[in-house]
Length: 288
Image 1 (cartoon, rainbow, N blue to C red):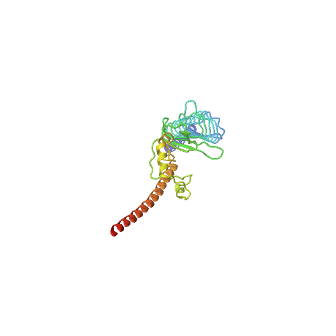
Image 2: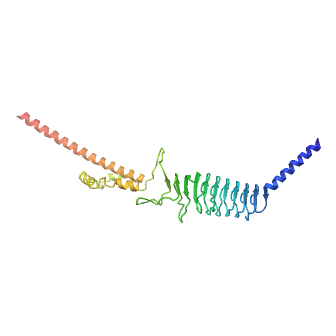
Image 3: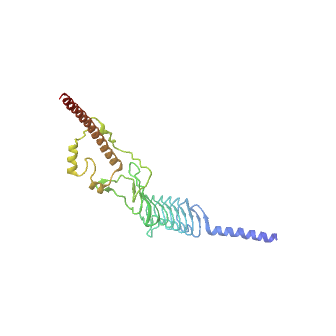
């Protein structure tokens, strides 16, 4: 009985080390797990390959490739690829999560990309500093650009399918400095705008030029809209800047308030004169 148990124990240990010998290699170049993982890599060091042919025929430093054929024919440094065939790249600092993410047949060449989801960034060949979150090559929920200029980060994010390049103009308005682009509607409980210009209380300044209503009427007849308010054509072509249009509308509300105050004064003055006239008429009738 003891001899049989000893035989089984030796057999299990032998099987374990045989499996380890086939599937895991540890040396100065890489830590590998899986059949042919890192089989012909020329990586200098600090890499982790796990999965069938993961990191095979690849080079570079400090890369982590997990999944069957992940990082196959890849180069570059500091890449993290997770998923079946995730990433065939020659760039560096890419984070690819999802089966077939960032894996174009001719090879992804860029650096600094983040692709998350099945087939995400599949066709972003030679792209740099891009963000793609989606569940297929043609279904992108979020598309972004981590572009950096000399002064500050100027990253851009697009929500909704169809982004590949961000618009730089809306009609004649320059929107190149905008950072968030959304296709479709936005539903939220609150929007707070940090207005960059003065609020419309300048209307109540004693030096404000409140135009006579006759001039306002003339302007409307000639232009078809209020002064300082964008026309229907302009809005159609350029859209509306929310903070600015709110300020303009407030300006018109405050002007209307001043007009109403003035009309109220005139109305009271007319009422007073009317009462005085009635008193004179009554007094004259009494004498007669």
